[in-house]
Length: 287
Image 1 (cartoon, one colour):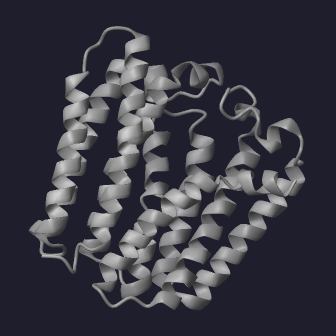
Image 2 (cartoon, one colour):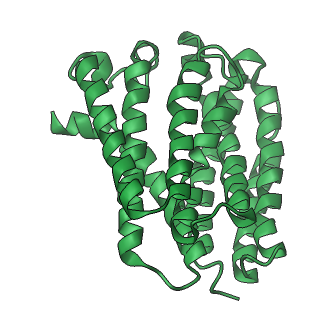
């Protein structure tokens, strides 16, 4: 049962967002790391994200029942009742908010709450009716590095905005790739993702455009003096390889080929964000 509660909080999403939150924190710290604040920020944010994910599962249990990758969730099988999931999600969320309120600052807390609202209150119901829900979900996923950054600086400035844009532009290709290779599942659940509503071609074009945006946003940190050229070299290399992989297999052949292409783009996006987060963490201290 404990494992089911753990899985209901989507630990993969928590860990992924913890990596980007840490990158924002270390970038803002500029080599002078307050480790206690780091632990407090990461703990509070992780609880907020976990609570949001549980509430997402609570609301989406009917959709999850129709999709292969989600039909085993405890809220679908009945192992965890919807009432228990709701209480669990709210408790995680409130505890996380309390930690951020006590140990960080109002700007970091507000950023985290914006993520909660955009994910739970906007993205979750919107994905049933609009193809644009992916962008709203991307906003939530772009918040963690901003929370990390603001926990250190106590302000939302141009550097924080660029961090937000980098993550937003990274997430859109990441999400659209999933929407392509799991297109049939989304269609079965009547979720109007771009690949279902407008076809794989439209989704593939958006993937390539957002990767270009990701490259430009990543370069801005160095161009505006917030990070060094070591970071820039890593960011540009990752972005250009990602773009090159997309162009190399950018043929409109059939759904099976599109799915293979999308899977490769998805898995490489994970490599991109991990290595970019490492580069961001040292971006302000390396030349």
